[in-house]
Length: 469
Image (cartoon, rainbow, N blue to C red; front, side):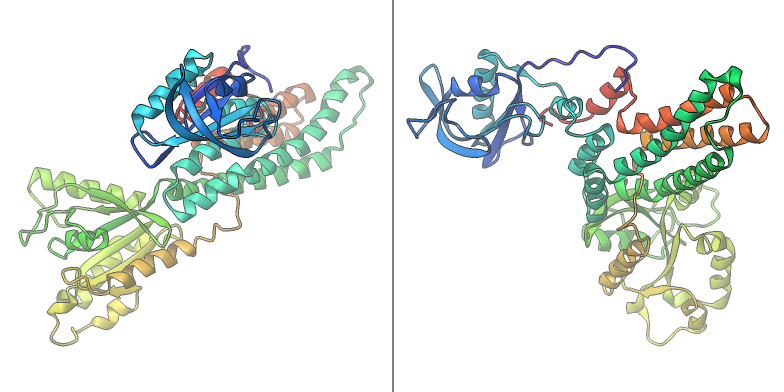
């Protein structure tokens, strides 16, 4: 790994709670570093009297008391993980105690007084990175896994943490590096005017790498929405029942419902998980011409939310359905209906008001439509199932998907550098100038996995972790 400045890596012993803040049934505290076991054993009084540092086995649980100055603080379970077979690749001790915040505080204070220090944010994972247990992309996958709130985000983060994305980047970088070595060798023999790298093979490789990078770059649009919740815009005319539908989906009174048109002046957002997928619902201002300045701003924001949405629910009052207003919707929102990156769904609301089938219903049935009564919560489960089915159509299960903006930017810069390489060879630019762009592509790929990085990047990444991770 190359850094812009020398990063100081201390192998002193750190400690921190690894469980969330607050009281619970149990809490987990951890130490990592060369003195982890000796510090822990100063306070651990095992029920097995013959136990000592010499007889303690790695990856086993031991029951006993945590004491400080002969005063029992709590009954605990202590586990010891001898490096390098631990999360950080150092000696690690984990203490399971009762979840009282007071007990946790006393134990942490005792460990610090015995020579440990409080860990910085993300320091456990940072040590795992420095000790070769994972690369930088995998470390970021750990953070995403902790933050995941749905099945799709969980699967995506787990795949990244286990190295699927890293393996692909290393494969691409290795292929480029092998040819780069030959290009660099040519520069050493510039006076002899020899070629070690076959130009046609190299151009084929650049084309292949650009195709692979392009696929990864394009996946970011999907990965980003999965990571932060799939945005669903609820749109329609005033009084169509948009806010009532949002409340029915959330199963709570989140939005104000009124018969007065234009009640919703701004977008209201809330997130729920349906069948393991996280959806970010956005209730918007009713679409109509308005002289009210505040309502007009809300309507303008509605169109902004439509552009950002992956799924669009157009709510209409089924009793008002006719060919003219259906045609108007198709004409106004046609670009979204035809957009392969979006799914446009009609929600025919207020079926509880129907005495007979409305005329011109066939025009609506030509498009994907779900019939509901948001007020009575009828068929809301069908709408939820439709949303889930649309997400499953995105087909991300077996694909490598980029969800990290840092990775996205690095991939784009690497792609742009390869385009420069391609153009350079096409314009017969000297090899020494082309090699600059090749090295740039390698640099940006290496920055993803941490083979090339700097202190500022590392501080920004690990600073976002919780203290105990």
